[in-house]
Length: 183
Image (cartoon, rainbow, N blue to C red; front, side, top):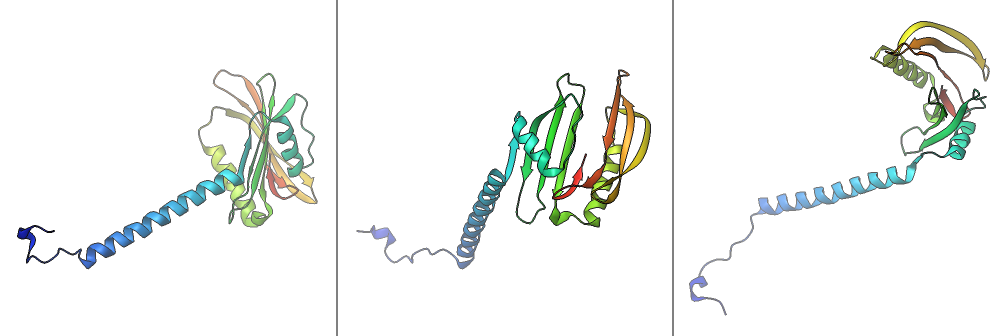
């Protein structure tokens, strides 16, 4: 039974503006949950990283290109990215046991394998070469090689670090088995 003071008073109702606001917030919350959860699921299921897995690194390198890896470099890590609406990418990482070298072979999938992708990769390399790095280039030259029927340019550089240790740096894009590859 209700209290006598409440008799005669009209019930308080929620305004229509408040109802619309609560509905919109509920829909936004559900959309946020679906988008974030879906994004998390896609990344967890479509991005692979194999740390300290020589077999995976060698397998990914073989998928990218037939390449003779210089003596002393051992396969270490591998990565594959295969997301919807984004060109697939993969990379194999080799390291020297003495810690004095790294070799990275990467590839962007065929969906991005056109002159625009090639230009974008070249721009990224140019930006990388302009950015402050730990190595200072002492001497540099480019050489052209024929790979898969195409003339490709590789940059060969001699560089040194702050302590004067000498390094050789080789980089350049080339046609891989499934798209534009990068050394």
